[in-house]
Amino acid sequence: MSPRLKSYWVGAAAVVALGILAVATVRNEYFFFASYIVLQFVVLATAWNILGGYAGYVNFGTGAFFGAGVYTAVVLINLFGAPLLVQILAAAAVSGTLGFATGMLTLRLRGIFYSIATVAVAIIIETLIVNWRYVGGSTGIQILRPPVMPPFESYTKMLFLAMVLLAVAATAIARFIETSWIGRGLRAIRDSEIAAEGCGVPTLKLKLFACTVSGALMGAAGAPLAMYQSFIEPVSAFSLNYSVSALAMPMIGGTSHWIGPVIGAILLGSIQQIVMVTISNEINVLVVGVLLVLFVVGAPSGIVGLARALMRKRVGRKAA
Amino acid sequence: MTAWQLRIAGVSKSFGGFKALSGIDVEIAPGERVGLIGPNGSGKTTLMSCIAGSLRINGGSIAFEGKEISGLPAYQRTRLGIARTYQLPQPFRSMTVLENLIVPLEYVAHRGSLHTTDTRAEAMQILERIGLTDKAGTVSTHLTQIDLRKLELARAMAARPRMLIADEAMAGLSSVEVEDVLGILWKLNESGITVVMIEHIMKAVMRFSQRVLCLDAGKLICAGTPEAVVADPDVQRAYLGA
Image (cartoon, rainbow over all chains, first blue to last red; front, side, top):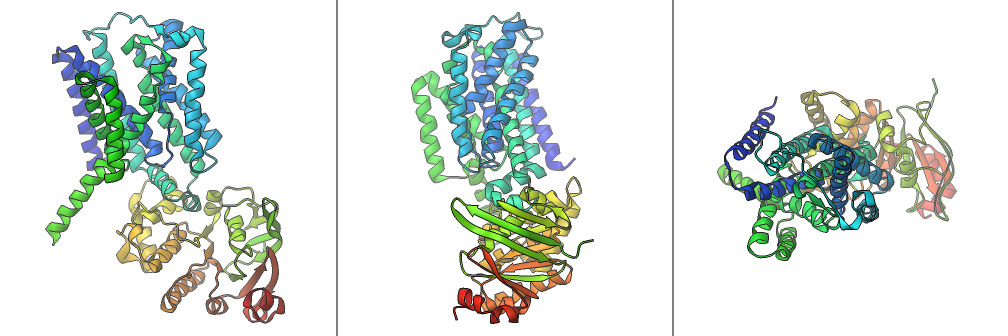
């Protein structure tokens, strides 16, 4: 195991340990309520970045893949009260398939077509759900939470810990892709798709792979929302906010390194939570917009890019 | 065993109503040095793209080492042994020179291997042959024109080709730099690689090629020794401006 990989797993283990410690000690329910949302965005931003950041194919329809995950959980709960793990795995399978299918239809073409298709997918899936009575249609559906399993004191705490594990899993997958030959192939595609193909990179296969993994993670992030909110309706499950945030967070954090989306999600997610509580729900969308514009104009490679430039300067000064 | 390495038979390619190539027949022997000339828009790059796989042909057949390849995607043709450089250099801009070479090494020669040290060592060897060793750690956006051209060649070599298509590898270079690139192509050819060169610098074509092909308006109008092709009245009218 390389020293970098070792320190990654030490860090990941520390995050999980902190999560468990919080569940055991923190009394305030709101902490878990808010942290859940931030962690959910860590998963979404990381998932978006696998295709959008590494390969440069922008997904405008995160909400569709997320919402498909939410409703997969709803269907499974309705059918036989499936346990959380089954909900998450099934949601990943459904949204991964959706990602693969969207990719299959559009990724043969290079460039913008995939992005346009993701917008269409978001609209199609939401329309389907609105017209499906079994999952509540446009009025939504009430979910009855099963009794909480010991050792957890509350359902929110259990979902919080599930989200901690999902976030660690998502970053581990992203990190693996980034540092392996797959990541190098995706970067080659982003830099010059025609030259990548000429270098023996099976561009279509790699794009489909990234699209599937990205979709699956988005779906997995959506599954626990059914239990978390215990009321699901299509407008909020497919909210444009997910699509915008999943794109803005990696852009702000930096798309070239797996930590970028994590930083972006924690920063932006926390600001959103604070603004939502202290000011209003509407202003928090404005915050995303303003920050995104500032970063795109001022620091296009995000916080990671800024940090790297700073380090290079310092190394340069030492050498001089 | 066939005597030819690449056989193009009756190849045609259209873009909408425009016939870019029609009825092209060419055979290229292993280890040959071939120059491809012709006026702008005559179909040289189109023909090379059809061979390398970035364009699909509308008719005819292309066979490489006895295998029909016209239906294969470009990446599989690279794996079979056809590499190319691009008229406008297409470096992987976010990567260093060394990483640029690691991509084809990982996806072609060292596919499935986990020994990254071997990959790096081979990449460094190639950089040494091409004369880019001191630039290994440079991000490719900071390269000069000549170094970009060399990177294109180095990256093509990293796919361990048996045929190299060099599409205007010397365009925009000074005469000293042209010599430099020609020297590299000679060395590659001596190691047994077939080289097909598209070039406008006639001096280079004349010296390097064993055989010259001339395209005009999507048709092969002449093929033969450099001297014979230059003396051909059709070539003179179409390309050399006599």
